[in-house]
Length: 315
Image (cartoon, rainbow, N blue to C red; front, side, top):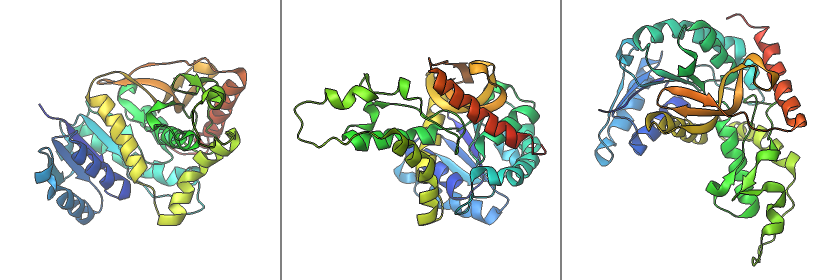
């Protein structure tokens, strides 16, 4: 039996997710929904015409009713971030859009796992959990999985090593208050702070790791891409498709996705990213990583920044 994925929003992010899912052979059926029907029809047709060289997959534009039986619903719709605009500036406008979508999609796909990608992702994940009436374990925000990928890519560049050898994470808001818990970051099981001193028999010049520079790079990467090419979509699509793969293959995987906090690290009633276990039924647990007191304080500060925005919004 195949996997059915519905994607709401056929802009750069939604269409690239659909394309990546098809290329990776993750879904046997992909439904693309957009208020701009012609755009959805065009994107679906473009992908569908390449399927003969891929695993069989039905890709088509549809309505909310076509989402029936979906295993995963991915929400990408909303206004895009403009150059110089923060993700949180988008908050009320995209909350209003999501407010219209929730009752329509949950009516036809009540048993799907929902992956929230649209920004501000932590706010919209919180909104979805609070207002959709769906079980909390089936609502997952993409959170800082993209930030984490950017971090690993940067550290891999620093040390000229395979990205898969890098195990480091970004916690908190998918935005300006995110941070790296360096105390649990390692490369090939060697703590990041000690890795350079462990390198031997190499003629490569190893630069000094400047932690603040790396974190600044992560926070500003999205803005730099938007300034240079108008939008970010490749890396976020790959990240979201990795999340879908972890859901569909049923193997529990720890990811920095955005979920509702219930007292972990002294934080409640806000959605943000920490290590969460994701599997076939959505969220199946959480890893409370042993953070330092300073890291816990940063996570709490990130939660407070999100709560300040939530308190100003109308859901």
